[in-house]
Image (tube, rainbow, N blue to C red; front, top):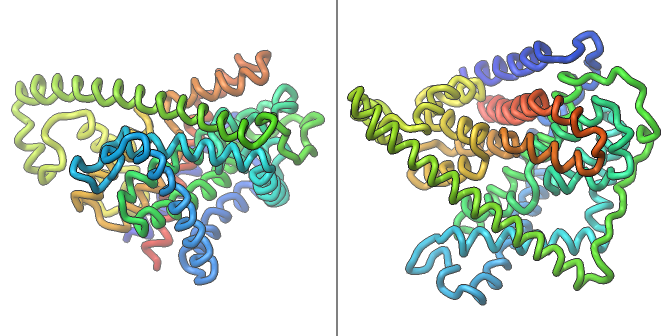
Length: 433
């Protein structure tokens, strides 16, 4: 039954994209079919081919091990406050935020020595050959597996101004369909807790999802925004543009750390504001409307205590549970997962991942559902990302800013469909295993 749900979900997602396409007749179905097969191939290889599974698991464990060294720096500065298994327990500000700073600095070093560019160029070559993307599209899409939605376009800076509308859309969709290494590192930290094995497992999940999402982003961007114009000079350029990182590796390390500090401060600020506003809204809804209507008790009873009454999370769960069902998740667990999906799209994925970590710790979701949920949440596809993309990419091509703004909401839809397709793909193959 779960496999039928997931397959139906995949077909519905493609049909939705076609319905909102700007030019249905121009859709390149070869690209669509190959692009949809790549995530399935990746998932099957990584999870069921012993050699590939061992290699990717080792990479995930190595990724988690590298992240663990951020704890040494955090404990040097904050002492026992940075010990996740200390007397005070897991303190987000002193345990997760330092990971963002450390990984940003580490990524800057990889970029300074040209390692990141070589990996991106290799992946971009594969994407260009298989999906028939232009060179800059391929570079940015590949870079988004590791970099953020404003950093990745820098690798195609000279070509942004000359991109077609379809290429611009692909850049936007790729940015909103993936995660940056810095926030991915943070999610590994609080989903895996202090357990290195769990950290390695979630690192593997998130890395797999990011790779699958990169291919899916190309598919859905080309369905919603088919290429109808001949590409300009950018079409055959397949090399990440060089960005200056400073005179030497120390300068790169420092600039990366300072960029990470800004990101960590932004994450903390946004979370403080959003969590506080959610608490205010929940108070008004649960203690006001919920008590007035007398539904809080019924909601607590019907959800087994997962929801305390008429809250935003409960409403999001009811609204999005059908999408969770179409990912191959059992109906009894769809309310919780639907709540995560709603929070991720309306608010941001950080809030959703925090709630997923709580549900995982409480045993509210089964292991396969936790895995599918992790895949579903592993992207920047939310309303605030539209503004971030328009501003970030628009800064590289000011004359295209109005066009980017016009593309924005359809690009968000494409990125949401991409994340749901990745989760449905995982749900399909998990149910058939």
